Each structure stands twice: as structure tokens, then as C-alpha cells.
Image (cartoon, rainbow, N blue to C red; front, side, top):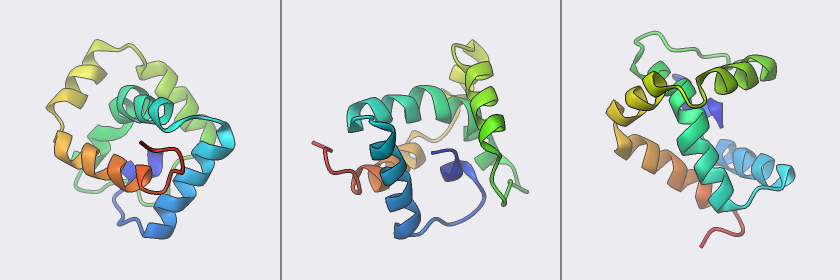
Length: 103
């Protein structure tokens, strides 16, 4: 889900790949939304405010370490709240539309 926070436009195929990874990991849509909102967004949302965002993506180890480091961080949560919630909702909606169990 971290690729949502890159400075690139994702295609429907990209959102479908994210949904497939969620399904493969065994998460429900509700669980994945919580992970997106409470773990991934606080760790990476600030990247969308950067003029020169990361285009290539991040190695899996970096994503894991960054999410774990920011998890529970009051600063990360505050920054996430300040970030445009509409953007996060729109991005989640595109992922959710590709999930089979989304209510």
C-alpha cells in the first residue's frame, strides 16, 4: 500500500495489484483499511507533500521498518490528521473497489 504515497499516478492495474496483495496476505477489507489508515498513511503521507517525491518505490524492508517505527507515534498520527483526508479516502476507495469482500 505504500506505493499510493509515491509521486506517480497509479493505474487501475496498480490498484488491482494492491488489492491482490491484500487478498494474498489474508486480510479482510476492514483489516486492510485499518492498516492503510493507521499504519501506512502515518508513515508515508508526508511524502505526498514533498515536491520531489520518491518515484521508484521503497524496498520492502524499508517499508516494514518505517511503518513499525512510526506505529503509535503521536507525531506521525498528527501529521496524518493534518494531511488531506479526502486524498486518503479517494485512494482507499480505489483499492477497496478491487477487493472482493468490500462491503
